Picture 1 (cartoon, rainbow, N blue to C red):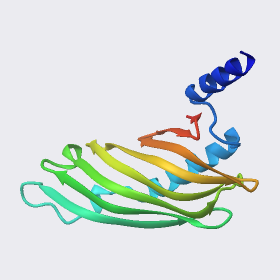
Picture 2: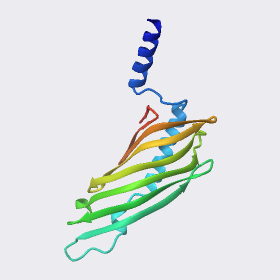
Picture 3: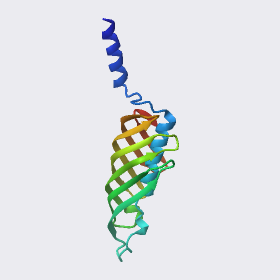
Picture 4: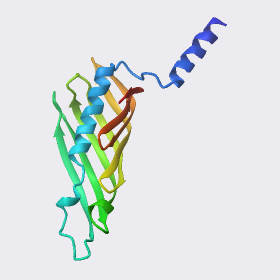
Length: 169
């Protein structure tokens, strides 16, 4: 009977979305920050596209291809297409895209090493857009590697993340 309660307690703890690894909150924050930095560097700029027509129509697609070095080695790259359509000036712009975020031995300032690939979506209108990267990454801390769920969402002025079950705001 005692084993039953131990197993039940373990299942309950796992289902609450607690920390999925030996990652500290500071290390989770550094992983989130590193991914956010790469995504921010890849954001489209509607003012850098082709010139607008007489009707002030601007529509184009770009292929994002950005690689950022990580503070303690390795890199994060962001690649994929993003479409921008501005039918009546910059405040009418609609953004959409699908990006791939690839971590290659990216070691954060807090000592967490990230490997793997996330999928990201870009959406929005006007000057406001959202980028959300989700998936699983292998994160190594002190020689122990854990495969963790990752979700990083960027909006103008904010970042909301969950790294290995650790919520970051």
